[in-house]
Image 1 (cartoon, rainbow, N blue to C red):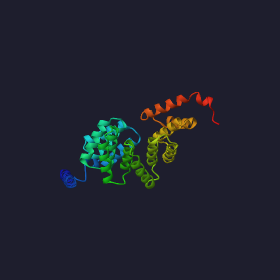
Image 2 (image 1 turned 180 degrees about the vertical axis):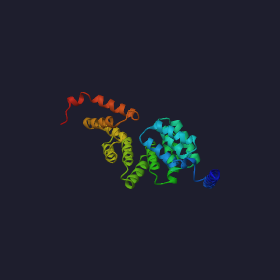
Image 3 (image 1 turned 90 degrees about the vertical axis):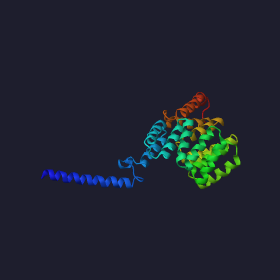
Image 4 (image 1 turned 45 degrees about the vertical axis):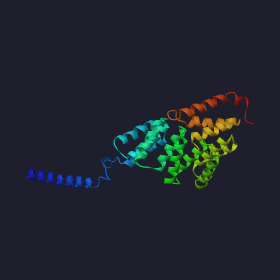
Length: 269
């Protein structure tokens, strides 16, 4: 009797397993082993993006590399690893990964990132092609718009940059990067107090952004506004992470050291 019950249970288990395998096979384009065990691509991509946002570029590169090796969302994984390589200044590898991603699927944000990488190499023709392709895919893509603005600034096409920036800020007044881009244009056109005002607007929207603080602090320094520069540099030292912000921390420390003695001899009025 017990033997019959065991056989009956075994048959039921086999039937259930068979139904499961048939279901999985018929839906294999929508399912994966990773999904079944809680390792769906979306959560893995989100984890990698969080690492990038925290500027943990080494960890992000390892994470996305694991996804690529396991053939999980390879287009997004190549894009993520490319951004990690950009953060690590491994530009050749970043360029390769963006190209691999685009060979799988053309997306405006990937084209914008490859545009920025070409800018670093001053390959402006290739950069412009990617930026314009990105905007043709999605005219409102923020990454593509900003990449095109910075490319025009690099090429000293200031009128084109002004037009794009003015439209960008009008359409996206809550995005700090627009004011940062405007400050870069104002600095490219010549030393300008207006750039300080633009950076102050950017910092009003993103008060802990180290790059914004550095640029404004350096402009204060260049214009002889030492107490204001000191305040920005000290904030950089307070907020910066030595593991991820070493260069900007070093630069801020150098500026602060140059103030020693000056502030004691020149008190605030």
